[in-house]
Image 1: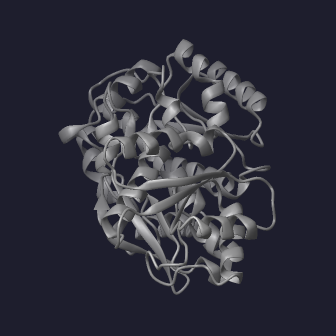
Image 2 (image 1 turned 30 degrees about the vertical axis):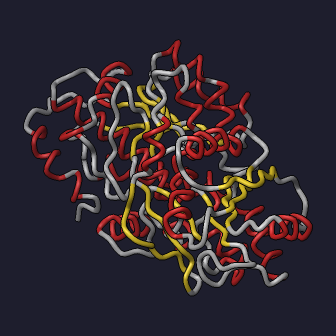
Length: 403
């Protein structure tokens, strides 16, 4: 059974007859935090890469050719990432799957010099500045944050909504701040009351009381799960988590991609109820063909339920799907697979040539002027301990206006 047949079988048949007797092997490299900081995301992410590479070869998605995926742990250390990247280049890597914001920014010049297409796990909009070779898998953190503010504005009752941003103290966290301000200046009618860069505090009581004293009703987070879980538990302990959207005198909590998922629910427990979260990825809690395929892939390669249900596993699968699809498309044209060939294929992946991987709520589309892959976002909300879809997938209007 072809697990991802919905987006691979038809294309495979188009070029199978053109396969030559001599098989080629194409190197895809990935350096990421399997251990250390953010390994709660990096570990399942790495498994998604490994499993889809195995699947590609087992199901002969590239005919007689194969992919060799080299996945290494860098423990979130940019110096280690750089060494891994250089070693991958020595092994004739044709496309690279990077991880953190810091290492993506730190190696940006290396990517330009090597002229190699790169798909990072970081959705920081700044990755794309002064770069031609970095392709974001999905909408940037900035677009996600703006999308959340837009939802607030459209659904708030009673005047201009007052919001606060809860940010990671890094480029990863601060990224959306300037763009949210630009969107507000461009006419998005929200009042940004306060910006909080969280530290390692284990108690957010003072901050919560301060925000409420300023009439803030919405807190939008751009960080990782653990500080959000602490924030939610503190607000819950104080009885200040809104039971319905925009409840007066309470706080409605929202967040971008790395602030949510099953890991957040596991960390925050009942305090996560009514938490709003956005990403471009499909979730296994919302049944779809992509969900079925992900679970089947995890079962095929012996993954436990925690990995199988993780949106970070989805994320790792998806970037590998895009890499394999670029190879497949170049092969159908009879092109020799190279860094340049895959770079060109990614830039042509738009319009009727957009790619529908099944792991995202919208198509992957790239061009020379747009290197954020999936523009579409889905809003989710924790309901009875599970993330459920809220409304239909959407594209943030003001993200396009300010760009």
